[in-house]
Picture 1 (cartoon, rainbow, N blue to C red):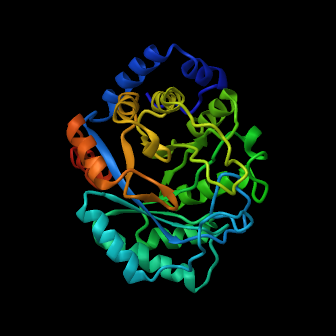
Picture 2 (cartoon, rainbow, N blue to C red; picture 1 turned 180 degrees about the vertical axis):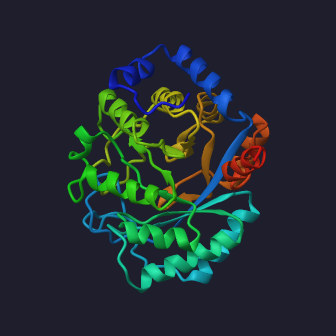
Length: 331
């Protein structure tokens, strides 16, 4: 049964349970709702890089930090569609476009993004965007253009949030999720661990996600990849057991969500990634970069899938299943 009335204490009990018991419970829940041999393969492209006015402490694209990221204007539509076709040809079924904006503005750049969305949608890919804050009207325009999903991470707990970002509020993030949901867009929202937060903060973030009026369809779990020049450049690496606790707790509390093993995967061994899949992860990003962060190569992921006997999940599977279920209802 899907629940949106979890208490923080219940989430904490799950998160803090003995790790082997936690993995067993999560794996059991996972098999009740998903095919354990199926993983969604997504590609993330930075369509507008760097120069962001925000101060997210983890982000190399913030204009105020001195990193190796070079500012690039919004890509041309044809170049993005070429990249999307290549992603499809190499096995991705979801294509996500990220722009380093604080919020979407109603201008020619947004019109170009709408054209990108329409073009990628026409390829038969699930098209996702992460563009910063959205109004209701902008969310509806994206939906009308064919947007399937919108990513807007909470990043961390509401209590720790102010230690990481000061240029927008936690409520701003929740409002954007609400606008996407109201427009009928699938919601993708998760966070980052390894930023100096406590276990209580990690539990708090998962509690917020699991008690939204409707669970996010996708929950990315990111391990911080420290970047020189950002305030978090000296943060220690997150262990695989911390990732497993996050993934397993997300799986148990949000059973139907796609739980995405996201940033930080490049530093994981095959065995560590396999443990994360066992704990309930069933989505990854493919391609050499996640916006500006290194990611395993396509060849490496192909070997991983072959070794674990994993196959890519088909695009629009949830929608197809819903149609089949509807067709079976006697009228």
